[in-house]
Image (cartoon, rainbow, N blue to C red):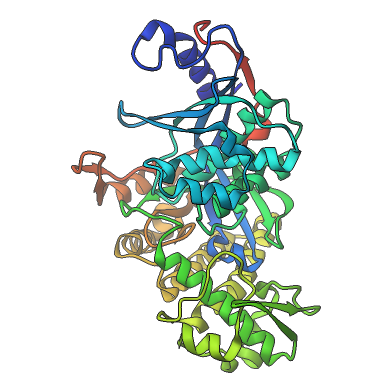
Length: 477
């Protein structure tokens, strides 16, 4: 069992003796099921996932642990304990809501005081029930404790979703594999939490392996395998101190613009386009199979770049092109989209990630770490060109570049959805002191508003499916 899950189970056993509101949270006479799922460090691929790119994701050491117990109260009750503060937050909704369509659940939670975070707990359970066909419980209690910090770009949301769904599956007696579990959690985030994420986060939290990069071809969710970062290299994450959110406007606009770019390319290539509904089209695409990442960089630059406008308003795009194939992010007529760069990013990123993976798996050459680092620097520059950079992440990348191979540092890039969050850093295993010096050179806002040293993410851990769910009882620690 993972050490953090062991500690969580022990803590659950002590709840009745600790007193307070959680002392009677679980019925001592009924089983409780506990599971864990880690966050992830996006080493390469990032926002190109929704365009069909290859991505490389490493599960981090920090994880969310969740305990679930079924009951007959008629309520879905959840409590979360902040890892960095003693605060406990509560959420409650009718258990009957679990049987509703995911879109209807989103509407119901939109007016709930805690619906914004309750969606990440109730949503995965509802998606699990819909997928497996299991009958909804008459009631359920959930207790979550996460050490994956929110807003750092290391996918705290996927860790919470996967840990909750994994524990709930055991409590409900549902048989479900890791791949399907990840897709359920993505559906919950997309349709209940209404965050337009791709699938890489949930797959990494579910199927990742300690110390290895999970290779996912997002067409839409094909796990190709695992590759290890060879000795003597390591990958760290450095928190920029700038909060990131996938639900933010910048991420949504870049995603929408990438799908707009694909629509322009499809038109220039003569593919059949059929309007489906306002803002939505179907593209019959035997050439790239619906994924713009399959357009090669040379093909894009020589054949299609000029067909894609640098910028266009949503209204002008809809008038001329009718819509996109994206089901999650609508085109806003009043917004001006930087289409050309947004679509160029996944086309070039898919190529970069494939080269990165090939270099990792090929016999090591003296220049290999520098080549890997250059691919990371290129990826970072492309993020910034899309408008998803930040001064803080740029500063970290610049400090890594300036320190360079002399101290064993080779490359760095912004991760995940960008606009802050965490920077992935590649270096020699002995370069960790240099990484910590770079982190210490800046400071991020703490929970109380004061400054704290920026966090360094070190190490890795297994995904949820590699760690057995624990069946326990409250008060029996």
